[in-house]
Length: 46
Image 1: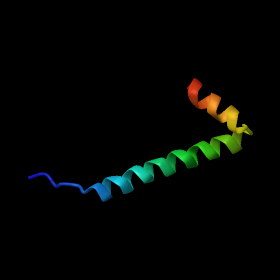
Image 2 (image 1 turned 120 degrees about the vertical axis):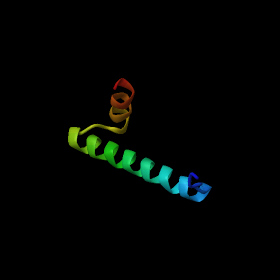
Image 3 (image 1 turned 60 degrees about the vertical axis):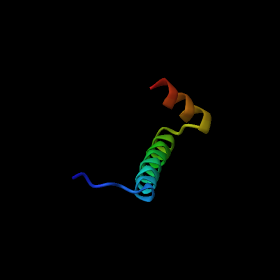
Image 4 (image 1 turned 135 degrees about the vertical axis):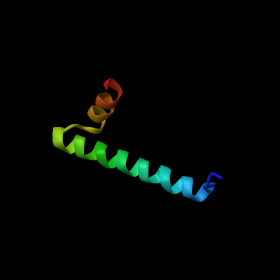
């Protein structure tokens, strides 16, 4: 029988993914010296 996950558990998992994505974007932005607009353009171009 599969284990059911609660809404709270799914919310925590989605927040972790969002946090990792934000951290990755921040590191790329600082590493390449991009502005906020430059980072946004780079994300959409990839």
